[in-house]
Image 1 (cartoon, one colour):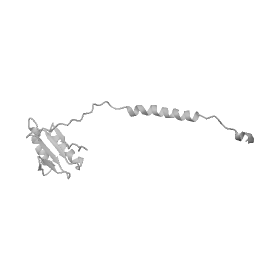
Image 2: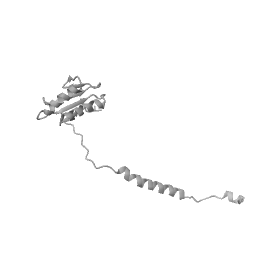
Image 3: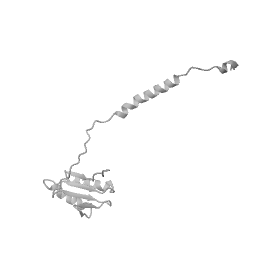
Image 4: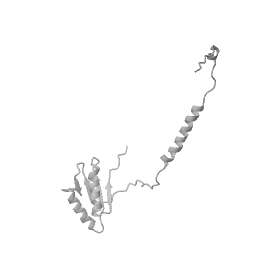
Length: 141
């Protein structure tokens, strides 16, 4: 093992060169990372998303409005039903009619999704073809 002692004159010399090799290495690594990740991020499935349309509701006498309150209680045209089996029985009668009336489902904003999902499932099992959700438009301001 050799020990090198520098002279005192070399200590005062100014190094005027910059080693750019680490900078180039970092830039090349970043370039490779970006080239790999950008196609993954921008790759999406081509979909035609629905446009928001504000249509006034056409209320007909034969349309049925099913409401779900925040506790999960089910109402048929503002009349409370005893249990989900009563809803299923009424929906089966409705599904047998020709032409079928529309079913409008209204849910309280604090209602669990499960309660509204059960109503939609009952409509599906009864063969109801037109089910829509009634919402309140957001307040302007």
